[in-house]
Every structure is written in structure tokens, then in C-alpha cells.
Length: 500
Image (spheres, one colour):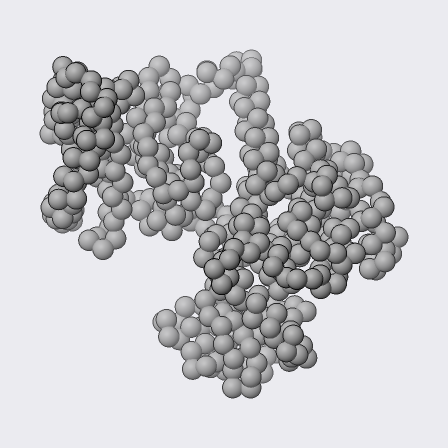
């Protein structure tokens, strides 16, 4: 039976369809945005029975928090609009997420470790974004979610990330600027002891909930079992009951000790005993995953049934597979930057350009062939500007400049390899993602440009090093690039048009 609101046109824009979900605060409808060509969205209404001014204020705050956080992280649901209908019922509009909750995905079974690590990286990135805070009235205010649980995590299909994980429902989120505690709010099975007490909370309350959820993901069971499934029962369990040991659960598990340790630390009864931040947990999980993968690579049997050494194992992998195992360097900022890197492959080295972009840009350009342009100055210091352009049309393109000092071993070696192989790879990382490579793109340098590179390499090798003039050479290249940009784009457009 269809809902009575089916087909209703909300504020002359959103045509309501079926109910997509219900919660304690209200219900969510799937809807069409008629202003934007019928794109599907989700509209959340505040329940009529909850219509007090205090709840209305909280509902609007939920929309505001989600909207601000959704702009900062792809791992938090995006809010697009807020309004009040003709009956004075507040609502807000979100992106429509077609997928399953983490609760549905788990199905009370242990989750495979690769999936666990993938999901947890994304959950941690979303949650850390909240803990880092949002700007309100010029001040950055931290957000404590207060209701981290499997049903508030949704997994959707994504062309770039495979499975995109998002944190939902900031309906009872706490801003650190709030002057006083608001009493107990949350889901008892996942609440920290201090949250059960109604005390002032910080990010470590969410970390406790995260620990409970991680245990459940890894084992298929909750770590605590109260005598009664009531507030009092859960209160006693969170305060006084020791969580189950991993070897006490029904399923037979083979988990790294470091992984069990970090989960247990998150479930510590007092906040100071837990990790200080979600980012700290994320770094630990990434390290555990890398160590596990390294151990697996070292002990993988070869065709003869013997254990393969790491070097031999890598030699069986393609160049693309080697590049895709790359992780973002810890000494590089998480920002839209580009830098060159040599990657060891068999008995040679690959020239790669490591690039961090938004996940949206990666999805937009990942199937496009990169175009390389080079600018060179021989004096006062030999420098090369390598410009990689990802191009769709005149309005949609990304120019990615990288400067090579041809008097440094890295710059000289990169140019030598390029002139010998004429190939390179872009290794792409998502700004909102984790430290791992998202995808790679093959690039090839035309023969006419290879000849230029050979000439510049020879000239630079015969030029003296004048390190005090590096900035001057770089400035000269930047100025030349700005002058040539329109011509480069026009030339690129002509090349693409000819191919079509």
C-alpha cells in the first residue's frame, strides 16, 4: 500500500515517491528533483509527533552539520537543501544513496579482512572529518556523532572506489561548543560509559562506539552481553563487564595480534585509555594491513610449491599491479599536488607521476589519455617543466605542472628513462580517500618530443650547476607557462578533433 504522500509535489520542486526509511526523528522519502531533470534525492521530514521547538532546532542543526561536513568528505552523506512545507513541517534534502547498511552487509558473520580494512579506512576518514570540526560563525567547532553503529553506515557502489562508505545520521550529534551535557542520547549497545552517564563528551566517546562496531565486524558478535536488553542492563555492561576475548567467539579467527589490540584499546572503559584520535586508529589499521600483505607476499607459494621471495613475487606482477600497490608518502601533504617518483620494476625503473585529486576529478578523467608538454630553460640553472594535462574539453581539463631539476640525480635519471622508453604512468590518489592508489593511467610521449628531451638532457649535462639560481629558472618557466596556456589548449583541442 502506497503512502498517502506518494506523488505530492513539495515546495513546487520535489515529487515524493515511496518511503525509503524511518527513524525516531521522522521518515525519509525517495523523491524526484523536478527542477534538475528528475534526479533522485532523499527527503527527510521531521515527525509531526516530535514537533517541539527544541526538536525543530535540533533537526535544523542536523541538516546544517551534515551539509557542512558533506562538503568536506565524500564519506559523509551530502545535504543539498532545507525548507518548510505548507504545513510548517521542516524537511531537508540529501543525496539519494542506493546501497546497504553495514548492519545488512555484516549479517552477523565475521567480515573478510580486506573488506574490513577497506570499510574502516573510509569510516575513519568520515568520522575524523567530523572530529576535526566545522566552521560556525568564524569558529571551528568539533562534532561528536554520538550514534556510531552499523545501521548508520551505508555502503554504495562507486565506479572509482568500488564500494563507497558513508556515515549517516547526525541527528543527535554534539557540538563541542555546547555549554552543557544534554543527558543520555544514543543507542545503548554502542554507547561509551561516559555517554551512558550523560556526561560531557569528546571524540573518544565515538572511538568507543567504533571499537564495539569493529569487534562486531571482525567476529559477527557484540563484545558485551547484558543480563537484560534494557538501559540498565547495558549501563552495567559498559561500566563493569569485560569485553569478550577474540578467541571466545564462536567463529574461528586468525587475526593479527596488533588488530585485536587496537580494537580492545578502543573499548577501554575510560576515555584516557583509548586512542587519542580516529586518525591514530586509521594509521594503525593501515600499517597492520600493509604488514599483513607483506607477510602474505613473502609466504605465497610459487609454481614449484616453494615459498617465493619478495623480489621474485614482484617480478611476476605487471607494472600496473606494482604501481597500484603504492601508498601516499607520509612526508607529503594530503593536497592536490603532483610529484615524480621512480618505481622499481624487475631489473629496471618506471617513471611515474604521483597525483592527488578529488575523487570526482579522478572519476572524470581516469579513462582519458594524458597529454604531456615540456618547457626547458638551460640558464641560469637547467630546469624542465613537465606539464601533464587531463582533458575533456576547453571547460573541463586539469593542468598538472611538475618541475625537474636536471642537475639533481632524480631529475636527470627521469629524463634519461623517458628518452629510452617514451612511457610513464600517472599514479592517482583520492584527496578524500585513504593512502592507497585509486588507479593508474598510462602515458606515452610522441617521438618528436623525445628528440627534444634528448637535446635538453645533453645541454643540461654540459651546463654548470648554479643552485643559487634554481628559483630564478623556476620563475621563468612559470611565466612562460602562463603565456603559453591558451596556445597549448588550442593545440590540444586540434589534436583531439583530428583523432575524432
